[in-house]
Image 1: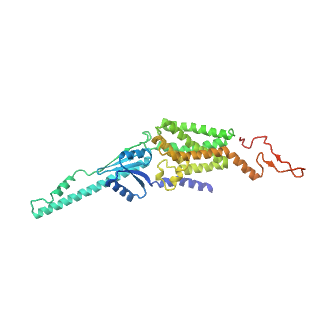
Image 2: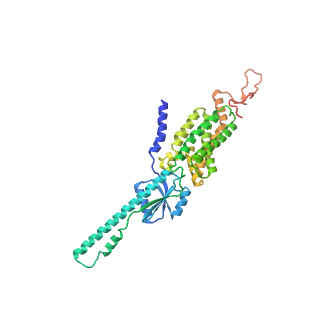
Image 3: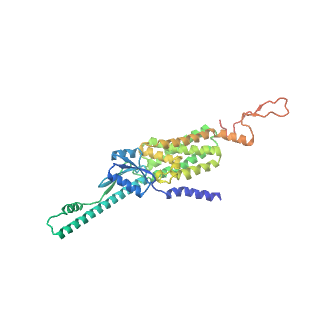
Length: 390
């Protein structure tokens, strides 16, 4: 009975965020403080309340710098005759496409407004001309209006153009390879942690930790060789990108190994549920955290899959800008996991001693009844503990 419920929850964990994708406080820049920019902000706020978090920049150069520093996903430069969309497809192809659509909508609306003004001017000029003819006057009181209407005969089309400030890799134009490379890291990390914890040849904690480090580094190198060497999806900062992949794997594998060490086989299921069904589903790797439902974005960024995807994107395309928070999350999970691997046997030993009433190794046994003197007898540890730890 429990299995169908677990399957239902697993499907909902992935389907619910995907079915509720929408912009929520997406940081977007507005270039300039002129009337055109203010009208654009008002129009977007009315059309999609709460979708964007607008930030003003004096010029396009400042907006470009903010995009490279990961302060905003893009910026809109609105003038009388054009709308320029500054975007970063490397930050999120989904948000980049969203901003492109928004820019085109603003341009279409400005075109409609100009066409309406032109039509109104032409009608006004026609009315004045008719009134002039009716009066039979040779003078032209509507001359100015006719000239203005004639001046509006020029095209009124407002153009929208897009500039990709930080483009995604040419071999991965939609970011599909990037997201496809990130998701398996979680499963691979859990498998590494389970193997290291359950392997009989790795009895000592320090051996387990060393094996985790080596396995994650080697696996990360393999992932990088496939993602970049074969598919070209991680084109920049090669060594740093490999280090991030290693840390991402280590944070998941160390956590899984630590939980299994503390809880036994049940820890494997708990790790998989937390990292795969929650961490991967709420990571925002295929879209952006700001496109996920409220609450899911925060949860996802506090788990290794979401933090790892964010740090990998920041490192591979933005020189590590805005990656400090993601790095801190990965380090925290890694330290906690490795601590559980190193010290978990003490917790298990104390738990067993409490459950069975057997004192731990080296603890004094109670005095034997009937003896002339209550001598403390200590159990000598002639053999290693149950797991052979140091």
